Length: 136
Length: 136
Image 1 (cartoon, helix red, strand yellow):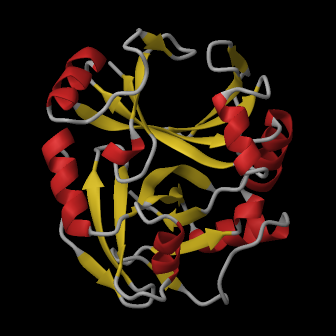
Image 2 (cartoon, chains in turn brown, red; image 1 turned 30 degrees about the vertical axis):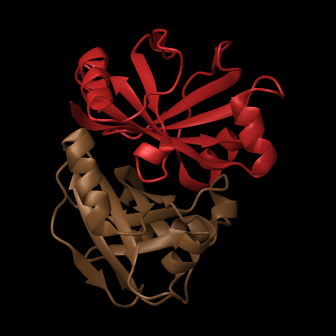
């Protein structure tokens, strides 16, 4: 079951430059940088209190995020993420209703250890949507 | 000052079809449809508790949202919106720091009567960002 908004994710050419720009222009503070080797991204978050902004920089050229940046050299909004109570129960239910969950069915976790999955954009109004297990 | 996440906004070819799909596949309930004549859009919201999803359907072909749909016929993520404590103070401060606020300086309000403004995507990492005054 979808229970809330987790974050909006933006691909950027440079995480360091993005962090400097957002802090200088908007007073937004960027948290620690982590690396997701599976996805080939360097990532950081801005905590807005009720939800977050995720920043992603390609860690290698051929990664999915690297390809997004080739199509959108300045960067841009890549996906948004919704909280779910149980990832397993929610994906089972929505697959039963005909929505496609991307990937090979292998368990995926984010940098915080939370279970995640992505939906096919054709099944969510053309938007790439991540589901993130959240038991806050 | 930016104080939180307000919503993610998705452009759709048909608000009614989008509402049916999101309810059927994900159990998401869409609120009442409103029309913004200035922007040429029909709109509705999904309340997620901590933030919302906004759906926008063009109300006329030549509107900004209609043009987005020409480029993205299935629809997709159009912008996201951040809460600010005072729209006037926040836009004055960020313009002073070199970020561009779109429009002709005229006061804009959303369907709920809250003051809003859009930032130039080049000033927010390639993303179109709305600021919305929120005194919740």
